[in-house]
Structures are given as structure tokens and as C-alpha cells.
Length: 474
Image 1 (tube, rainbow, N blue to C red):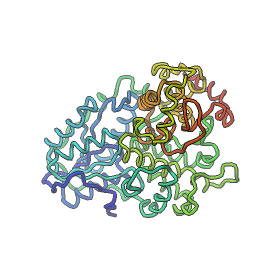
Image 2: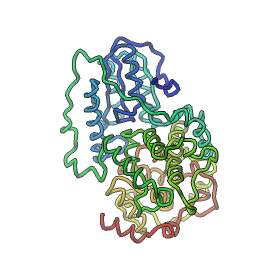
Image 3: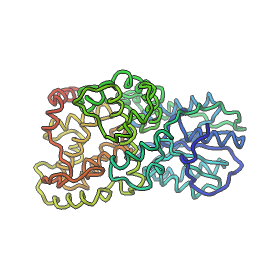
Image 4: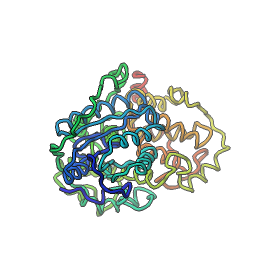
């Protein structure tokens, strides 16, 4: 099976050179179910060249710490082993920080002299700047593959979408075409004349690595276990219980999807197998509805529809937002109506004000907010429903929308395994700045940005039990 050409974009117009084909692995840390790696192998077989995979490890990338480093290294070590079994070389570059990483990549490729370079797509600014920098320096063909979205971001829509309701029908029309199974990565018949340097993995892991892993283990094999458990045990209650943080109904796949240890397309395909139904039926393409009636009698199909809405529509909407809105991580990226509404509330007195450090240490007056922060500190992930409440209260307890946005991104990126991700930026922008939402009734501080009250949480689940759970773990 050939890779769909619409998944591919040229990053420069240079011809094929004489060296090996190289896949610069970036967003997709996996050997199987990876359209970018499959395309790189397709080119290597066509030109009868060795295939080399290179990953640029940036310690502390965008504020991430020891937990993210351990999780990522666990995945990379597994990838190196999987590639070795396929006679594909794996090279690791170490960069000390984001600022020097682009130069480190340029220097590596200048020394290695590849014939073709393939990379995977990410809309995050740092990674897009690396692609741009490398595209200018390479003398060989450089191509980029969207291996993350089921429908490539540039095919799904040519512009930033207003919300899920505008992107949903566009995605649903294209899903049947793009939701195809992956071919297997082949054992590669061509080898480098000389090997690549051996990686000292033990040296790369930080001290006390086991203490830094939180509750998640990195790697594609572990990701598949989590996926299987979710589809078998949690999917049957997903639509009704996903917003209750005391019930294990969410998928817990976001860390693996963020690091590309699991393809969203694989998750969707496995859900299709479980239901034995075409994708058009499961996502309710004709009905084009965002959610099921949680109060009505539900079948497994309804739960799967609700899950695929999040996995496909909402997740790919986040990539759309970051790809087409260059201010995705600043207040300037908010819709005009929200900016104006928030501007009117700048002088409104805040009952509580907290510093970044007080937020970080879960030292607010609100035990529920503190519990959500503790959940993130302890597990390296926060329940999705609580993350909305958490972000909205940061807006309420800081002096400006700019400060609120900066604090929320800082905390999410530093402590969450699924931070530094389009989903995180879009979710925080929705909570604080009305992105992908509409104007609501005016309230102090929020303006017409949607408000979220503690009483709403009290009605949905036992907040006392949630607070007690994370006070004990803290």
C-alpha cells in the first residue's frame, strides 16, 4: 500500500541526493503504524538506500521535567529496539535546549549528507521553526508527513475553524477515505556501510528515574495495553461517566497520543473492529451530532460515538487551531468577541489573587482546585473535566487574562505528560479565552466567556471524595 500523497508536503524543492534516506522522528515516537516512517521506507526501497531514523532529544523541552524525560526515553528505547529488528539504524542527538536544537539538527545533517529527509508534522511553533530552518540548510529533498491526524490537517480544512460544529462535517466526509489500516514496516534490505554510535541509555535517564515516572510507563507496547483495557472495560461507560473524576471512564491515552507512542488512527480502527461497523455509522456522520443523550438508554455504539468525537473531531480541531493561528499560546489568539469581553473586565476587583508559586503548590482557598492540581502533580495528568474548572479559576484568581494564560500553560506544560500539545493549548484557550466556544451571559471577570461554578462540579460528582482522595496522596 502506498502512502496517500495528500499526507505529504514538500519542505523544500531540492532534488534527491546520493546518501541514505533519513526519517527525522519528531512527534511520532513509534515504529509501527507510522505514516512518516512508512513513507521514508517506501522512498528508501525505491532508491535502494539504507534507512536511518534520527531523533533530537531536547531535555527540558518547553518546560517539561524529569517525568516527561523518563516517559519519552522509555518510548525511544523501545523504538530503537524495534528498528534494530528491522535493520533500520537509529541515531539520537542530544540538544541542551530548544534554542540550540535547530542548529544541532542542521549540523548533524550536514555531516551525514542524506539523500532524502522525511519528517512528521507538528503545528507547535518550536517544531515548525526547526522544519523551516532545516529546509533552508538541506541540499537534498525534504518532505513532511502528517502522521498524527487521521485526516491531514491541510486536507481537513484550509483555514482556522470556528469550532467543532464547523470542522465536524468536513472530517466526517473524509474519514472513510483516510481511516485505512496501516501496512507493516518491513525488514529493510539495505544497510549503512558503517554502523551508528551505540546509545548509552542508562546515562540518559535522570537520577531516581523510577521515582519520576508517575503512574504511566512509556512506550508503544504499554500504550496498546492501556488502549485494550479502555476499549474492553471503560468504553461501555464512557458517554455517561467520562466527566466524573471518581470513575475510571476516560481512556488515559492522552500521554501516549501526545508523544506519538500510539497512533490515533490505530485507536479508531480498533474501536471499529470492536463494533463491527463502518466509521460513518459510529460517528453519526449523517446526524452530525456532537454528543449522545447521556440520560437515554445507551448502547456500546453510543459510547463509541462519544469517544470518537473526542479522539477525532476535538483532537484534530486542536491541530487546526495551532496550525492556522500563530498566536495559539497568547491572548491575541482568542476570538475578537472574547478579547473585547475580557478587556472590559480588567479593572474588576478579584476576590482572590495568587502567585504562580501558590498555584503550583496547590495553595488556594478552594480545596477542589487544590485537589485537581495535586492530581496533576502526583499522576502527571489531570482529569479532563477538572482541567476545565482548573483553568477557568486561574482566570478568576489572577490580575489579567495574559497572566492567567501564562500560568495555566506553565503548569500544564511542566507537570502534565500530555502538555506542550495542541490539545493543551486549545483547551486552555477555550477555558480562558472562548476559543471554539460562543459568547455567554456576562459575568464579572469572565465577561461573556463561559463561566464554570463549583456548584456544577458538586452536582456532577462527590467533590468531597475527590478532595479527600488527592489530599491523602499529596
